[in-house]
Image: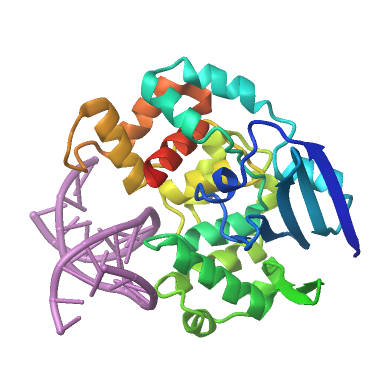
Amino acid sequence: MEEQIYKIDLISAFNLEHIFECGQCFRWNKEQNESYIGVFKNNVLNVKIENNQIIFEGICENNIKETVEEYFDLKRDYEKIKSELSKIDEPLKTSIKYGSGIRLLNQDLWETIISFIISANNNIPRIKGIIERLSKQYGKPIIWKEKIYYAFPTIEELSKATVEDLRKLGLGFRDQRVYETTKLIRTKQVNLEEVKNKNSKEIRETLLTLPGVGPKVADCIMLFSTLKCLDVFPVDVWVRRVMNELYFKLPEEKKLKREQIEALAKEKYGNLAGLAQQYLFYWKREA
DNA sequence: CCACAGGACGGCT
DNA sequence: AGCCGTCCTGTG
């Protein structure tokens, strides 16, 4: 593997902070110079914006242009999506202006499943720390510019970890869930290759059979991985707050149940509900 | 020291 | 069916 570089003209639906800080990924970190470095698959990339260009540079297993186009969802027309969603109502329009550079990454399904099981009842700094330790312990090293990075462990690699090993890495009560899910996937009792060919409803049902995957985690996996089911609407405490505030003017949380919020979102935002969720979430989190 | 934040799950009504 | 305590660790 060797260093590669790829540049494209800057597009308006591409902002590093919007993409990497909207809660969809855990392995991208900001450098001193405002660029980001991240690990995905067997790639380590630095992304920066300079002179109205987006510059992707780093160690890339396959052709960097194709890798980047796939991972950063570059073939999807976000301008069209934003203008369609902006018509729906004022709050959504405002949130879209705020997070205009958001794109949904096409992340590896296996990595997304494990990452979001770890995300349960957890905060972002700690989730990031756990995933780094898992990768360092079980993943393959990748060296770039004298620094060592670690790929996320493969199914086989993570299968070497015992529940106790996972506990030592700080997973807490999620250790058992990650262990059992890894076993189900390794033995193909849940076959990830087959999941890809199913429809949205079947995918969700399958994911929900994995230990540690409940409704919210299932939706995140479907939205943030290569599955790209844009119609799901992950409801966490933040989204619940926004929806209650925006549409019901209820100062107290928990007035609306998760299912009710989900149903409302699908009714209002239709098959782009997942994107709407991201704009609203990012807006509320940062503002 | 305690309170709190964050989803899944199992046990209880 | 719905509600609620518990699971673990970091932060204030």
